[in-house]
Image 1 (cartoon, rainbow, N blue to C red):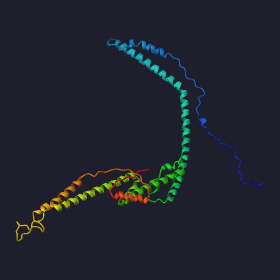
Image 2 (image 1 turned 180 degrees about the vertical axis):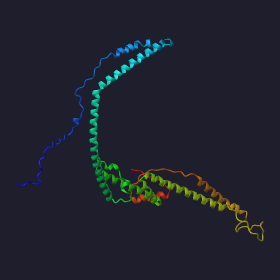
Image 3 (image 1 turned 30 degrees about the vertical axis):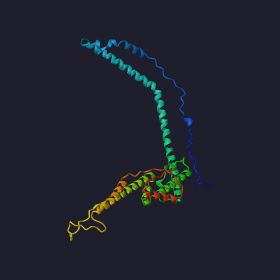
Image 4 (image 1 turned 90 degrees about the horizontal axis):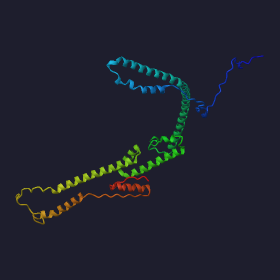
Length: 328
């Protein structure tokens, strides 16, 4: 009879299988089946009453240089009594606390074992959550690519909350759609700023904050208006200086410097009279220019096509009308 070379040899020592016990929460509820509070009968209270009654005997006024020996003896007596009582108290306290100390050690050791197992399980749970979040983020990234919205990266609008298990993929996709719609609307608003549109869109795409971008746009408009006002004032001043410059003296001629030929159609005396209306008119124009301009504010909602919205924005920019976007 041939022997099977691959047959397992019977083991001389039997291996006892380890029984795996499932722990239930109810199994870990601490139950006190018996509790007996210690009972202690001593004469501690009697000793306290004796000490209270004898305090006058040991008052400091009863000692002086004449009875130093008595003072030393009383001091030794009191110290010895206090030390003996404290030593006995410590001895009894240890005896009474021994059962509770053992109970405390068992409980602490059990809690340590539970925490060790919980920590190991937490590692597995965390790894699973990380895999789930990575899978979810990959799906969100793929969805964002389908929108072909390349003017910003996904990280600009990504919300970590979308990766929570409590947030569905439908809600995460809706969040992306909302962000893209908001950005498109904000860019349409910035396109109404004419020559500043490209600069403002570049600033906005860096922050995605339409409020701060519109504030910057208004600052640009005010600065441009102030610069234009300064240039107009300078030009008017130069024109006024040219008008008020006296004519150069006549060249010496046959009349000499004392005789000035009268201009055609009138005498020399008529020139000052003719210039007076022009000077009065310029003075009136200057006074009107110095009067402050009254600004009014009106709020309204417009419903029309995107092209009309842009045209309306261009009109307001060209006419130096400050405006801001109101979220509806």
